[in-house]
Image 1 (cartoon, rainbow, N blue to C red):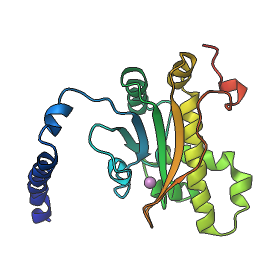
Image 2: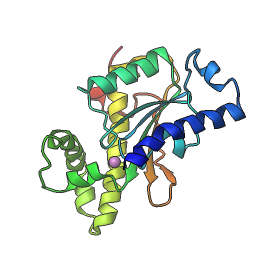
Image 3: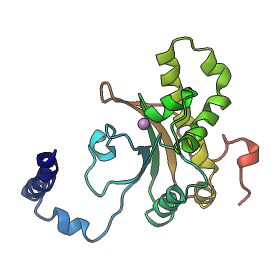
Image 4: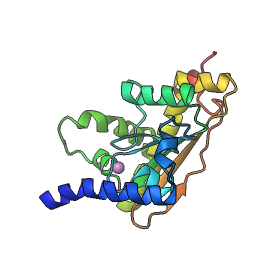
Length: 211
Ligand code: CO
């Protein structure tokens, strides 16, 4: 394990060499600032690294990750990332990327307590409740789990659209698209759920802000 740790900094030096080989001005250019077109909201799971799975370079993706890629309206960290991405960086696309086999979503399907994290997982249980008739009707447990992962992404896309940050951007004619994806850790393929939102019209009326 010590060797593993020590190798990290060695790996970093080798990575810098490789990057400079390909593009001697790479770090110098990035040091002037960032203009990423994408905000990524993903799961903290170590198997779903944002940049790597979409072949993006440093500077291309502004990233927020937490357990089960949640958009929780009292999460100051998520709101600050969203505000900065939309209002300062002016990203064009916000991608919520969940993944099949998500431990957070799986935990939400059970009644097992896990400690402090139960308070986070409770928000995922709300998604189950919103879609209970559909989910309860799926007999096969894996199929139900996969569908729950997809519905959780769908609800987080809606939750992004409900924020005053996104609705204000839309009201100001800022072109922001919100997408929902699910990554499959078994084969590396991303499933586009094709639920892209470009305005607040598909939100229930009660969430639409008169800005
Ligand atoms: Co996960």
